[in-house]
Each structure stands twice: as C-alpha cells, then as structure tokens.
Amino acid sequence: MSSGMTPHKELFSLRQTIIIGSGPAGYTAAIYAARANLRPLLIASSVEAGGELMKTTEVENYPGFPEGIMGPDLMAAFQAQAERFGTEIVLDDVISLDLSGDVKRVTLGNGDVHEALSVIFATGSAYRKLGLEDEERLSGHGVSWCATCDGFFFRKKTIAVVGGGDSAMEEANFLTKFADKVYVIHRSGSLRASKTMQDRSFENPKIEFLFNQTVEHIYGEEAVTGVGLRNTVDGAETTLDLSGLFVAIGADPRTHLVHGMLDFNSDGTIAVDGRSSRTNIRGVFAAGDVLDPTYRQAVTAAGSGTVAALDAEHYLASLPKDLLAGAETVAQTEPVPA
Amino acid sequence: MSTAKDVTDASFQADVLDSEKLVLVDFWAEWCGPCRAVSPILDQIAAEHSDKIELVKVNVDDNMEIAAKYKITSIPAMKLFKGGEVVKSVIGAKPKPQLEADFAEWLK
Image (cartoon, rainbow over the protein chains, first blue to last red):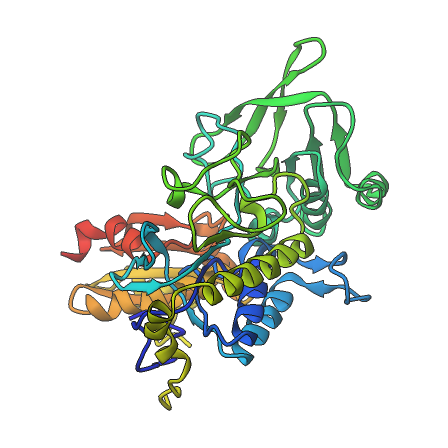
C-alpha cells in the first residue's frame, strides 16, 4: 500500500491527467489542473517527494518571500495548495510508462497501474556525479551530494565542495557551520555563481578557493582521506587531505522513463513545441528541469508547470466526447471519508 | 510516526548487540528529510518480516557515542546486526523494492 493516498473509490478509474513529479513544476501543474476541474493524480516518488528544494535550507530568491523560506517549508506549501483544490497524491515511483494511444498507462513500483488521457512529465533533474572510480564506493562514507543531509557529520573537519555555481556556494557556506575548513574546488578561474553568493563565499573566513583544479582521484579505504587534484592550466598534480567531499557540479534531466518514446534535444532535455509544453506525443506534456538546461530555478519550473496544465486542459477539451466521458466520471465522484 | 523502538547509547548493548534476533537499526535525525521518507517503508518491511527481523531506531543527535562507533557519516543509515556484528549496511533513502533486494539474503 502506498502511503499518503486518500482512499477514493475511483482512484484507478481513467483520469483526465496524471502528473509525474513533485517539485515546483509538478505541484504548480497540479494547482492549475485541479482548479480547471481536471482532478489530477500526482505521483510524488517514494523517497524523494518534493524534489531538489527538500535538500536546501533557506530559499531567498523565490518571489513572494522577502524574509526567505526553508526549502522543505516551501514544498509543503506547494503540496498543501495542490491538495486544497483536489489533487490526489501518491508516494510511489513510476517504473514504466506506456504513452502510445489515447489512454496513457503509468505503472508504479507497488504494481498499481493508473490510466489517464494526458500525462504531464515533470521529473526534474538528478545531481551529476564526478564519474570517478571510488565515488560510488565512498558514497555515504565521506562522498556526498547533499550538504544539508550530511554536513552534520563533519564537525570540526576539513572538507571540500567541488563546483562553481550557486549550489556549490550555498553548500560551501552551509558547511562552514560544521566544518573548520571548506575548500571550494573549481575547474576554471571564474565562478558561475551569482554575485551575491560569490561575495558571501569570498568573505567567509573558513572557505578557501582552489581555482583551476579538477579532482582526479578520491582516496580512502573505509572513508574519504583525501583527493588527488590536477591543475587545469599547467597539469601539476597535488594531493589534498580531506574528511569529506561534497559534489555540486550541476544536474542532468531525469528522463530515463521516456527514452525511446519522446523526442529529445541534443542537450538531453525533452523537445517541446516552441514555448509550449507539448512533446511529440499527443497528450504528453513536459515541465520543469526536464525541459530547461539553462535557467533551472524553482520559479521558472513553476511557470512551466502552469504552461503544461493549461496545454493539457486545452488538449482535453479538444478530445472526442466519448473519450472524455469515461474520464469525467472521476470528476463527479465524491471522496470516500477516510 | 514509526512504531519501532527507540534505542539509546545506554540501551544499545542489550537491545541490539545481545539480541537473538536480527536487528535492523535505522540511524536518523529530526532534521533529515530522507530519514522521514524512508521510515514508513522500513516499518512496512519490518511488519512483513516480523518473524525474522526487529526494527529499532537510533537518533544520532541524542546518541552520538553509538553514531561515532559505527562511523555514521550520512543518514539515513540502515545497519543489520546479527549476533552483535553488522552483516549488512545500506546508506541513503531508497524505494521499498530496492531495500528488499538489499536485505533479501536475511529476509527469506
């Protein structure tokens, strides 16, 4: 049994739309779809519901929050808003999709199969790995991709963050609450991060920048003891003693579920028609980081979630009446009291 | 919340190391989102295999001695104990099918 389900009698009936993904794109699509009476079902993932913002602390650049808001609190608010208008949420993982035909089929980890006339695909992006030999082996033993998750365990230690964007700066600054020293290892001489985050990092006495360096090796038997660095300018190799290595080098769109089904761009994002959310398959829409390699902000994802919901609504309204009739019985069903 | 027993630095010997059953220890903390996400999954697995294993929880904020002894550097960390020794260790929140596969050898 999946947890977090309201026991609607018609849960497994043909739905008007299923939203896959529970980040800002997914929840915003759900809010708009629910308010359009599409009675959306949102598949939120068994252990990663809420997306990337669940792993951050203060979100200071989401508009509408002048004092900032904690990532998990922002996602809880998104979820509450989606549920307020009637979104049903299932905490399970999609393991396969059948997008051919008018009725799309979504199969979950627990074996349940849900059917809908449209699907909004908003699965976001997954953190990129360095691709080094010992990275997997030492994952959880000093190698981490989540400062807020694991920083606690590096009190008074010397650690490093690899990366040069806002995420890397946020992680480095956060980690100085615990660690004595945080190196930031970046492969070029200049950072991609916003000016605000760069300045904050430069002013932090516990942060030291190592520019023009890449990590070539991760050392340690049972836990990380250090890394091997290579200078990207002159090729010089050095070692750095560390207790922890946090990798913050960006993220790739999480699209494996639709490989071989949807058209892709050369950068790995899902191809859509102009500025709409329409993929090459009728009734299938995409939103959030799976589309966007460039901006990848919560607010741009939320915006694209709206586009997807409106595109889905328009598509459903264009379907033949007999096809819609089957799905509309769900819209008329009252929830069964829990 | 979870029905699993809370184990402390003081009770670890008796509750885990001296236990005759297989004990699955879930190391967690209040501020750890993935820990909260995986908790109901562990409850389900424990309930489905209650004849074989017992699930207990150790809060790492309150029990730093045990957390340090078992070199916890990332949570959730799930360690299966048999006769006082760790026989299997899984780190990070994972979906139910994956956890069942990780611990399959001891669940059957």
